Amino acid sequence: MPMITADDGCAIHVEIAGADGAPALMLSNSLGTNIHMWDDQVGEWSKHFRVIRYDRRGHGQSAAPKGPYSMERFGRDVLSVLDALGVEKTHWCGLSMGGMVGQWLGANAPARIGKLILSNTNAYYADKKIWDDRVRFLESNDLDKLVDPNMERWFTAEFRASAPQTIARMREIFLTTSKDGYVACCQAIRDMDFRASNPSITAPTLVIVGAKDPATPPSQGEAIAAQIKGAKVASFDAAHIANMEQPAGYTKAVLDFLKN
Image (cartoon, rainbow, N blue to C red):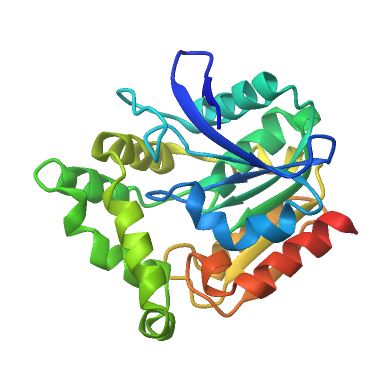
């Protein structure tokens, strides 16, 4: 699958499934993951859409140029991918960081976005300390010191116990993330603020929350939905990576929203 060069020269890894003539659906990953977090969804969604997955800069097989990064930079990477593929408009499904990038796109590139799914995400952090502390911790530690706390945030205890193979796969994905890229993404999350721009979003929007999500609690998703006119909210019995913890329900809810 292609490596696409963003407008600043960064190589972005992209994979595509589904018919060329089908409507586009672009998927965007959470912090510390790669395109394979969507493996449970691609088979079904690609029956209806041209599914475009990509590794955000600093993640997966994409390049990890020196930071700082920003949500605008991530959004422009997406536009570079769409332009290179000749895609004028795409639906968007982004989880966590992917939902943050989706908020930027919805407000700043409305002509390029069809329907918008913002999953397990936030619009603004009033308290920057959590991100400053994580960046400072990584100055003298590697990502392996964060992998266990991350799994506890990403998945409920019940799911971790019942799906050890999935947890092992996600641990491996997290540990292969570029530390420099991860840190630069943490800084971008710390600095984002979509409170003023979200009310300008006109795309039909579905906000997905995890009822047991400690990383982006339901109240944060509900606040986003309140900012976007007509936005709907769907809740799943899951922690942060809701699409993996409740794959069947998640797959169906997104498909129902996009098809109706």
